[in-house]
Image (spheres, one colour):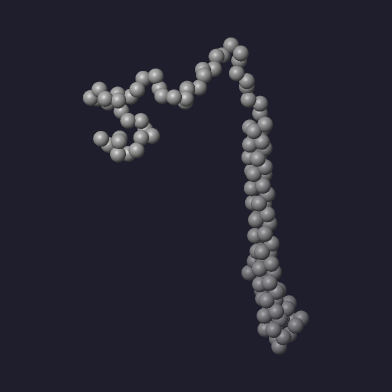
Amino acid sequence: MFDFSFGELVVLAVIALLVVGPDKMPEMARTAGRWYGVLRRTLTGVRAEVEQQLLLDDLRREADKLRNLANEDLLAPTPAPQPSEEIPPPPSTSGESALPAVQSEGVAAPSPTAPIEERLH
């Protein structure tokens, strides 16, 4: 965090020793160490919070992009069939089919809606 060389730290220690005196030096060093720890924890917490906010902003932008793409797809007009194209009629569901299903022995197969006992015989 602070780029002090060893020589600079020695000079600071000598100046602190002269200003404070040898009696108060250990107490001052402990206090300075506590404040340094508090400062580091605070800066680490702030850095983590900023990184988390940046990540959340990126995720929000991605979600907005995806939401816009989905809305464009939903709101895009679908092409209508051309009048020249003929749409086949749906298969008839009223009544039996034109050709009955035949088993290999030449007997008509039971209808799929028949009870299971009739289908097994």
